[in-house]
Image 1 (cartoon, rainbow, N blue to C red):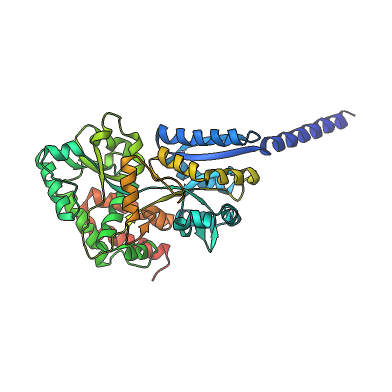
Image 2 (cartoon, helix red, strand yellow):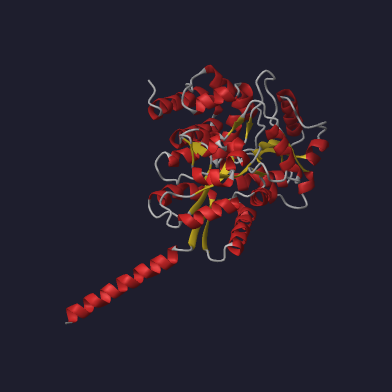
Length: 415
């Protein structure tokens, strides 16, 4: 009898647990968001609040994770107990997970919501094998932030448009005791922006994408030419001292305090500028090195996705449809310091975002997704480690490129 009672109690507990799990998941939307800084977190929270107001039957369970930690944790979530919505990156970064069956096919959502037209420019980056696995939210420009007051102080007449003008500006700043360029090399991806732009300006986007795809050797003379141009900046001490000791947050104060004049970075950092300093901050296109090379730009696209293992796909589809509207795309763009990916969203009014929009709009040579989004993660990790080695000791160009070439052959199975 005791055994029967005990079995009955266990059965009742299991039934209650099952019922609780059903109640917890049906109408509960788990959303994991990667963010940089309080402003980015706030705009995502506000977006969820708006969705909740329009969909009161949905209980949102958000988790905000700092971006670098998010990158590490994401594979585990997708392969085990996934949330219902994640934010991530388009291009190869999206395709990596889509190809492994870890992201939900949302092609029907694209048709239903008219996104083929709305997101025409980012459809290719949202697709894998002809199907869509993401909804673009924002994209952003990369370029040179600078202190207008410091330029004026040392007699720099205008924003450098050519490489010679840029080098002349660096020379004047250094002579005045101001570090020309701040960079937080402890975050290896900040160095990748320098490699990308030097390669895009010297060799062009077609070459760059072939290199990203593993089709060009790192020992190719054209790749060494990129590093040689980079080495000249390091040798002339145009970057802040001990750049590898600082992450992005640690490097930005050099700009804020007037100890450095420029920083190559995406427009997403503009929202974090101190209010009193914002009027002195300018933004210009990465200088042209070879006028014969079609001008390409970095335009990384952010996106949201439904994991294949999501438990509440019905409400997840309601959420992506909501975020995919022109108004929400514009709101996210403003809050994230980016540009709306939705072509029907109003153009940004914030000055730096507007400049970035114009830069991307006039990119005759194409738009790249950024170094670690244009190639496989394994090779990107090796490449960025190589960049840190190079910056630490630029005399090791050949050693670093030889090591990267061995990694390319192994990862891409090249002979």
